[in-house]
Each structure stands twice: as C-alpha cells, then as structure tokens.
View 1 (cartoon, rainbow, N blue to C red):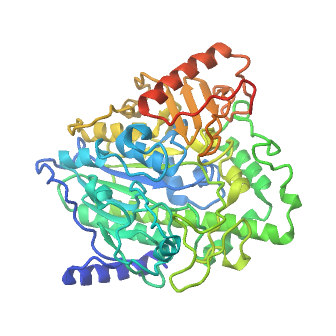
View 2 (tube, one colour):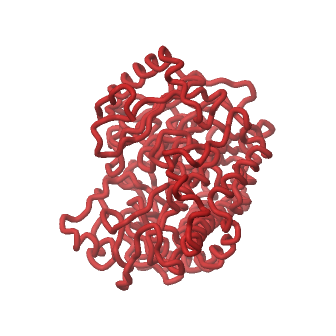
View 3 (spheres, rainbow, N blue to C red):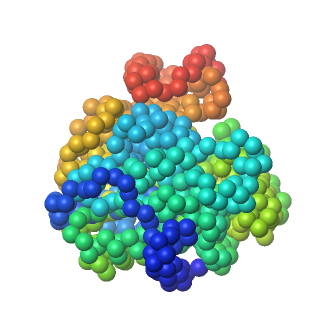
Amino acid sequence: MTGFRHGRWLAAVTLATALAGSAGSAGARPQESAAAPAQPDMERGRAHPNILLILGDDIGFSDIGAMGGEIDTPNLDALAQRSLRFTNFYNMSRCCPSRAALLTGRYPHRVNMGENGNSLAKSVPTVAEELHAAGYATTMVGKWHLTAAVPLENRNEHLKWLNHQAYADRDFGDVSTYPTARGFDRFWGIVWGVANYYDPFSLVSGTTPVRSVPKDFYLTDAISDHAVAEVRRLAPGRRPFMMYLAYTAAHWPLMAPEPLIRKYLPRYAGGWEQVRRDRYDRQVRLGLVDRASNPLPTLDRGYENNASIAWRNLTPRERAVQVRKMATHAAMIEKMDQGVGRVIAELKASGQYDNTVIVFLIDNGASPEVMTSADYDRWSETRDGKAVQYGEYPDLAKIGGDQTMAGIGAYWASAANTPFRYWKAEAYQGGTHTPFFVSWPAGIGVNSGRDIGDNAHVIDVAPTFLALAGVRPRLPSTQPVDGTSLTPLFRPGGRIDRSAPLFFEHEGSRAEIEGKWKLVARAPGPGSPVFRPWELYDLSTDRTETRNVANAQPAIVQRMIGRWNAWAAAVGVRRRIEPDRGSD
C-alpha cells in the first residue's frame, strides 16, 4: 500500500475514532501518557532542539547504499552524506539489550535486559522520562520490545492468541512497562519483538490493543504514516519534541510487497559469495574500508560451514528460494527508507528540519536465524486459519507473503554484514558494528559530512541527547550512567573523556574494546554453563578480526580479562565457567 492510501485511511479512522472515543483500530489516535505533566516553560530553539531517533532492526552493516550495499536507500544515503558518520560505533548485538542501552545510557544488565524477554527496570529512568520531565514533548512509533513477553501456559491457547484467533482484548504484558509509562506521551506500535507485517500481533495505540487492520495494511508503511502524522501534530507547538521511530524492518519474517521483491531478484542471482565480494569492492571504493586493515574474511572458515554449502552446490530450487529471501530482505529495507524520506520531508515542510537532531543506527547485525517451529512469539496460522511454513526452504511463491516465517539465514547474513565476521547475538564486529549518522543543520552545520573514528557505543546516545537538549538528569536512579556525551566530537578536533573500556555480553558472547585492542569470545549457547575461549584482535591493523593474537599478547589478554570480569560482576552478568585452556 502506498503511503498516500494508508495516510488517507489513517486520517479518516483517526477522526472517526476521536469522535467515537475509542482506540481499538489501527488508525486510532495514540493515547496520552499517564506521566506527570511536563514543565511548561521550555521552548524550542538551538538550546533545545527537536530529536528524531531512527532505529533499524536486523539490518546488516553493508545493507544500505551509503555502506556499500546494492539496496536502493536514497534517503538514508542522503542523510549519511550530510551527517557526522561514526565509523566505529557499537551496539549490544541483539534487540532488547541494544534498545535498553539506547534509552537509558546504561549497560543492559543494569536495567534487567542482559538477555531478551524481560521488562526494562523501572528503577532507572529512560531518556524520554528525563526529557519529558524537563519540558519536551515525547512520542514513539514502532517496535518497543522492552516489556516482558509472557506466553499463556497452555500452548494451544497461546498459539490462538498469537494467531489473532482468541483473547483479542488481552494486554500484551504489564502496561506499566509500556512506552506511555516510560516517558513517552504517545505510542503507536508493537509491544513484542516479532510481527506479521500484514496483520501484526501486539499492536497497540497507547495501551489499547489494536484489534484489526485493513486488508492492504503493511506495517512499515503504517509506522511511517504515524511518524509523519506525529511530526505534523508536534511541529506547530512551541515545545521541542523527541520522537523515537523504531522500525521493525528488516526483522524476520521476510514480508514485502510483491513488485518490490521482483525488482531485487536479479541483484541476488549470483549468490551470497558474489554479493559479499561486490559489497566489499564498493566499500573500498567509497573509502569505508582499507584492504590492509580490513581484509575480507574467507567464507570457508568453520564458523560459517560455508565450505560445504557453497552457492555452487545448491540445487536450482534452493538457489531460487535463497534469491527470493534476500530480495525480500532488500525490499523491506527500501520500504523503510521510503518512510524515512517521508518523515524528513514532513520536517522540512513544517520548518522544523534545520533544528532537528536526526540520528540513525541499527540494533544489531543481520540475523542468521532460521525459525523451525511456531512457539513463544511465532504464530502457527494466519487470522483466517492458513498454515504458516517454517524452515530454511519454504514454498518459493509464499516467501514475502503472510504464510512463511522465513529469515535470510547465516550465509546471506554474512553478506549483509560485509566486511565483518558473524552476526546478530555475537560480540564480533558483524554482530555489534552499526552505521551511526548524526544530522543537525542548525547545530553542526559546516562541520557535518565527515567521518569520526573514535570508538562510541549505544550507551552514549542517551547522554548525548540530554547534553544536546541542555537537560541535566534529575530523576532518581539506582544505577550509574555508563555512557558519555558524544557532543565534543561534533566539533573538529574534539575529544571525549571515556574513563573505561567498552564492554559487551549477551548469552555468553562477550567482548571488551580498549583502545586498539578487542578481546572477544563467541556465544556458547544460552543454555551452556561454560564460556568459549577468549581471542584478541588489534583493530588498528585487523578491524575485521581475521588474526587472533591472543597467544602473542598474554599480558594484554590477562589485563583485559581482569577488567571484563570486574565489569561483569558490577553489572550483574550471568556467570559461566571459564573453559579449559586450549578448548574450543
């Protein structure tokens, strides 16, 4: 559905719902927050700019055009061109932990989000709560995923709920943990982490479940439409605003409009190895990577098993399925880019663009996940009873529609994360390295359009926003802030004062970055009681982590292990047993 068609429907239903006093449809006006009234005296200006935070989901480091990809993303490419581009920016490698760190400035373990599936701790304020208390208008559109997703005890009944076949009025979690209870005046989006793009589960307006959507509904377009509507609502006011625009694209299941999927089929016919080489060559030409310090890791390493599943070894049918999956992934990203363009266009039309800080990043690297069964947050049927297919090779024609739970898998994820190794949920570069763009014409101006090589982290975003807004943290908290403001780097030659290394951990995958050194280990699996062995890389000469120098630098390894262990104990990382020396 085009944004225009969905926009007309949104406007009509919003008006009808407002007159009826109901919020039970997809176009309902987002409910107001129950938070305390904001301070009335803050006015928009250079000292208090608007903030637009855009988050992509499961998008690879090289997927967008500005990062070397072949996907058409002209709006994000233009944003990158006029932004400060952080070339060494890191997330927490997975959805919930990255979002928790993004909104609080703390490592996720401090706020009950070291692992997926919990609710964000109420004892630590979000950046939205701090800005709201200072006088900002706050709004969120898109994916929350910071409320515990609790399944029904009976699996059959739970699947009925996920399938939209029962419990239509049931809350999707504790509403006191929804965005409107965590500093956002308004919220429209999904509470859980996975959604059918044509008929999403856990969709709410404020706290009210949205019971149905139109037949031509597409979630990415709807998120963009609501974001445009929120800019239109907020722009005439005097108060500065913060919008958190959290897209679900390109998280599985792979779903996109058929014409856009067909557009991309020829681009992936050569397979993941060819796409990976082509992206790497473009990155070199764009100056994003240096062949000497960013060698492209080979695909015949044991970590990917690619030697036995090379593209040339696939059957024609397997190739067709794999091409269609990646083409759908690309179509989802282009749809998101179109929406970003419409939101920025509305900022310009409203006169708010120059004084709006726009930030774009991704929650983690592209995902290798291939779901094999319905469970927890994955439905078994569509609303009208059509079965949903799982696994690596669903029916070709159904990929992109609502009858598969397809994901791109490990091999395409490697291509999407070019030039790095690994993917979502791993602390290696492919899991944690994200593009990070900052645009603010009125504030950065002539200093924009350049690269910043300093190490930076998702924990730095909230402190940066507070500094830009001129807001000193005022709300009580049980945990210290881990991040630091990046605003000194907005000036050429500026430096940040970071007193500690950067740390990572998720389900046993762990890392520490101290200067040029990165200590890292793979995830052992969420149920394993034993960590995997540490490796050490010199990022100044090997940013793609191809040469493990742990044996040559034992003193550095031991010093960094000591610091990581102290951090892990301080923030509450779930402990595992260290492996025997030499084990794998």
